[in-house]
Length: 292
Image (cartoon, rainbow, N blue to C red; front, side, top):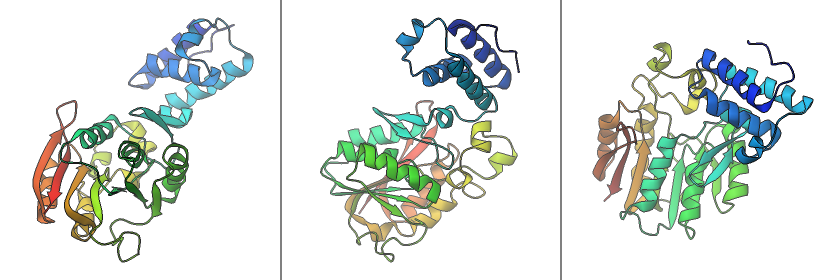
């Protein structure tokens, strides 16, 4: 690692960190360096421009953060938060970091004329809770249920819900098993079901088709799902008919290689008007369908 500048200024620290990140393959070295410096100094971007020198404690904290990020630990884990739409959630080891593609799914659902005023909303594989929180804030009279299997992720889910949408009910359960049999969901009660499930093919890890942050830090149970990435969706779909009310809408994210397979799974489960949707990069990203 490059030597820390002598009597470093804000400018030289940013340059130093940016160079290290670039050498380490960090995708956005300049932006990450600035965000980390804002984090350790508790300064906004504008306030940082007015700073010339940092305290010794701030320099040491920044140096530690740069070491962590240069090892490709996710920026969000270091900072402790991740943005989603118009809010931020707490994240850390054991919980999946929300991505822009999931923001697009949430935005589509909130804008769609196929969704009016759902009485019951279910978010499956809720993770940090971003979908449940966004939908609870938008459909403010709905009962929102967030289902998560991982105990590590559940800690963040409950904390984020408490801070941002305390009306959301959190459920610790395996969604490949019946949530009705366990007493968590009333039969045929869900008007809107959303999910960003594990969907990356397991072979992508061995073939190095995922970035280092995902490979080394994202919880694998939230990322990978069988040989082609549809194992979870296939297992979960067998329960859909027992959850959904007439006219319910389902929106599920998927790998950019499995749009057709995901659509077929939902159609086989009994959904109609199944449509595939692309992300902002033009890649197949989520599927929607209507029950009855």
